Length: 89
Image 1 (cartoon, one colour):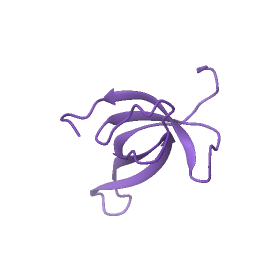
Image 2 (cartoon, rainbow, N blue to C red):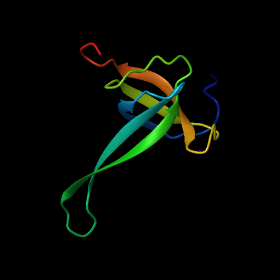
Image 3 (cartoon, rainbow, N blue to C red):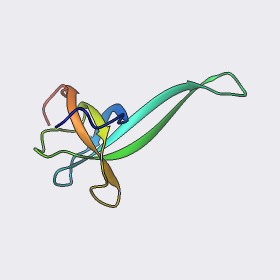
């Protein structure tokens, strides 16, 4: 993995599904101030990410990085596992 591939977007989120082979679903939550109402709003989005070793489990906190399209919905890959899920499956 070369690090000199330009400015790639990086997101941190929680794995919500690992049922597919070499693919995980990551829920990324962001917290921002509403432009009109000035209240803090929480929004979330799910990303499909490539997990080559099938190392991630549901509940893990992972860092994903943008990459070329790998399939119809998958254009992110796992950069690192920030925190493993507590408890056994």
